Length: 392
Ligand SMILES: *Cc1c(COP(=O)(O)O)cnc(C)c1O
Image (cartoon, rainbow, N blue to C red; front, side, top):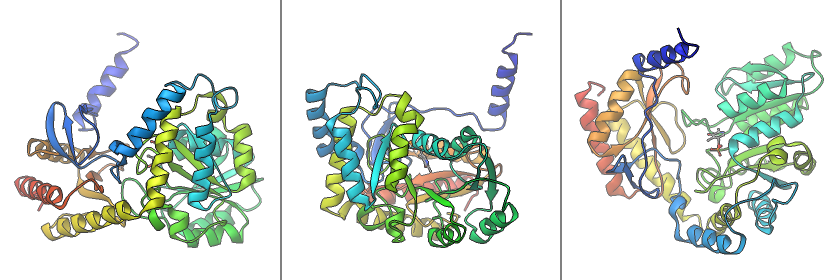
């Protein structure tokens, strides 16, 4: 017996259950097509919603910033790592989103970790949607606050949980994903806000999949529901629709000021590089110039989803370009993904623990970089594999 035997057993267990991640390798820039494990395939699973990850304007901005600032941050933000570009990006994002202020983090993940743990301590509670993203859950755990999960997207359940726990805590936070990343449904933010307002509780939304997707020209979920100034904290990411990398927190001025003092990933880990910040600024420029990419994304998503339904697939409860193809057991989802790949389509399967057991799926991510012809080729492959495996 070795002290590592348990790991080998756990890993074998994952393989037996069809839950072992086999990570594919990308050999090209992001776009409608990708070189995956050396093979040229249609790309149906990256979060590059607007096709910005390989946009000439973003590349040019990153190149120019590299020449001027070099490639490494060399220090954390609070010591010597805040460039003009970081400051400009935060100002531009605040203006774009109509928020009082913005702080950026290395990623959406660290934005959630840093924000929740800076606002909540062990005397406090967090009311958290049961299907919240792992980074919210980890942020809640890190804070030491008591976590009170409420039923998914259910403001009535939230209110009941608040009433039930009245008087048992000092301060509270309500936190929800904006767009739920595995199902593509949207949180009922206005109704959740009413509950937050009634009980005067801090209200936070993580809009990673809504940033650049929802709202006017991609201004996010707060804009989508016209809740400016009402949602205290809106977390977002620049690694999805923005096509670059980095997290952001938009919201109330004093909260952002506090996060600059006490957001631990901001204080103790170096920021995104100057070229990253420059590319993000170029993304904001593009989004402010025109809604064309956001409009194309939605047109593509509506077309693909409608055609998949016509073919007889179950696309779940999605209201956004995230299109889950519900398959049930993880081994079936894995097999489906492999067969798609053989037919020239790259779409990964997703199983436990990312989604509940028995709810495995292929998650298709539609983007503005797809042309109709790409979508039709994808649909053809789905139909072929779906019939072969008896799904439709
Ligand atoms: C992707 C995602 C994140 C993490 O964003 P990164 O910038 O990739 O770290 C956080 N929250 C939600 C809801 C997400 O979907």
